[in-house]
Length: 351
Image (cartoon, rainbow, N blue to C red):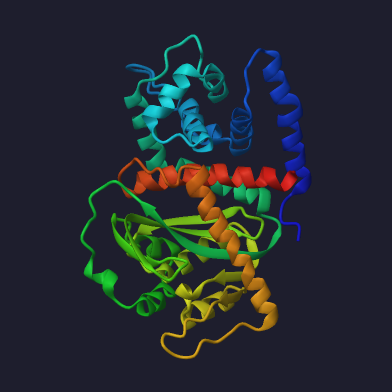
């Protein structure tokens, strides 16, 4: 199934690959394969178009926010761990400076300026807005076969908060409550404080971590569609309905594919109400496990794309190196990585 606007993607890729990059080389820029990926990512994501350029006209003029936004997106592409390392890389790599937009003849902004800019990007959801625009532009008018829903642990370096008593109630009751709420109401009630989470790994052993949990909807072509950050202790099923509403506002899909952690009659009914076919692995809960019909079992195998994208986000785009504190900043850090991952998947579709 062709789930991308192939002609548009090919045109953009050819402009960057055969016009922009050769032009940069003719001007004397030194471009490694990694820096070429940065050029492609910045040209496709266009985060600078969403940056505010407001200036009151008094006091010192703020550094160009578009350049700083490009730098943080490049940080995810290059797998740079933190802001200090990013500034050090920009100091010695003049090609990266020019790609991000900084003037080589001027001194780079200070580390504190980088941090203040990142705080602003976190509060305004810059990376999330750029990712949503990219998804709508490339996949918005196409029919997607499967959306695979999954959650992954995000380790953080901050003090965990005590769990709220409301989080300890049965997930099924909360799902029933969500079905009568708007998306904004659901998102307000999802806890996002750092705490402890426990989950069984692929070998069936329980593992614990301190931090958060990232919930992702991923298309069968490997592009992340929507993302949601919660406390590590939140049950996976409580993020299913908000994610489905976020994804349905961006793309049209046929199947919702989820593992046994989402096994719920309420979620099954919600998927049908949305016009989707829910494929949820059965959780026997001590009883007899129900198996998929053979055609559905084949379709359920598409869920592995979610696990691959979670692994790529952590291994290649900074998901394993969270050096900021607070849900807003952690989500912003992850969304820059998700945006870079989405562009990388689009380029892979063209190869």
